[in-house]
Amino acid sequence: MAVRKFLDENGAVLLNEKLTAKFATKADTTDLPTALTDLTNDGNFVQDANYVHTDNNYTSTDKTKLNGIATGAQVNKIETIKVNGTAQTITSKAVDITVPTALTDLANDGDFVQDANYVHTDSNFTSTEKTKLSGIETGAQANKIESIKVNGTAQPITSKGVNITVPTNNNQLTNGAGYQTLSEVQTAINNALAGITGIDFQVVQTLPASGVKGTIYLVSNSGSGTNIYDEYVYVNNAWEKIGSTAVDLTNYMQFSDMVALTNTELNTIFTFAS
Image (tube, rainbow, N blue to C red):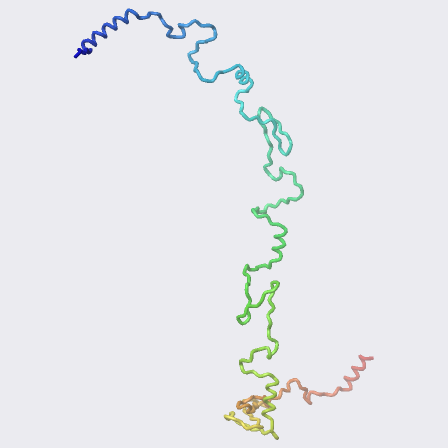
């Protein structure tokens, strides 16, 4: 087998010494610039210790543009300012606009009235609202009657009105209480008097359980004068009061109230007549 060589540590040290010595004899001793001052200045560069380099080149156009801008100038430039269509004077880049601070500073067109007691609200009061308010009664409530009933029956509401039919005659009522019409009473009386050939009167302290046909019972009512009895007849198995013996002569003239005119009174009458 062929022998294989290798470089051990001692050999590596020796090789390094050999190479170092070899390159030392081949070194280039030419001096290179290490600062701008080592270069020849062609006149286009200026030494400035405060100079800071940027990536934006500053051109002659930029210089001209910058010279045309006033110191402290802003981006937007207002060329004219008007108030109510009138141009305002611009002095030293400022405009003093006179703004009214009181109603007295304004021209009164005749539609405004000065009132120290006036209180402004956010709700404008229109003529329509004024008319509406005038049509509302003082103290009117917001309640609205939505239904009107008569004896539990709702009535129809037509054109904001309700026509309620109210009975004006007994025959329009339901006869639930035993009331009789005039014709029914007359029929009952005729039936009760049928076959009676005479009328009898009987004075009693109290009404008996039943009565006799054709007899009018007079019951004392503790009255006085002509009003001392109540009159009853027995009809259809029940007592019916037909009146009393009272006679009211309050509005009647008595014979003693009639006095003849004297001759003196007659002469006085004829004197005024002539």
